Figure (cartoon, rainbow, N blue to C red):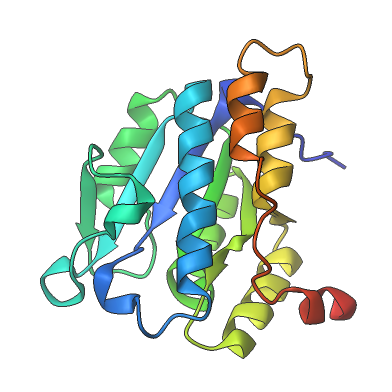
Length: 196
């Protein structure tokens, strides 16, 4: 069985649908976006490519500014999976990375559909549980459980950052350490963990 160890050489970050209209309704939205923003900053420092999508932006608005993704091209979609044609092309152009790191919303909809598609493509999927949510905590927790059943790895913001650098001697460790200065906010996962 594969250990599921992340590597900067073979990973791509997926940022899913963190848009303005979701702000009032998504459980722990502010903390979810703040954690995803740290994963994005780390990806930039470590040279990991990022793919950003927006669900029906005409109706649901743009990606929220605090994600810090303003310079990225957002792929508009109506499907629940992020694996639309433009994203497939982008992955090919990146040399078909083997590992996907997933952040965003909603856990039981677009994150789940994307996870199943990536796993069927033979990719290893790492769900950043404290950077993923839904409107309902029930949907979120069952989605995490369901994705784990399909073979996705559940992880956290801080675990991803540390796994990617692997050594305090890493040339970028000091920059990554700055992103870890504040512990990750509690996003209500502890109840779920006892049921895992």
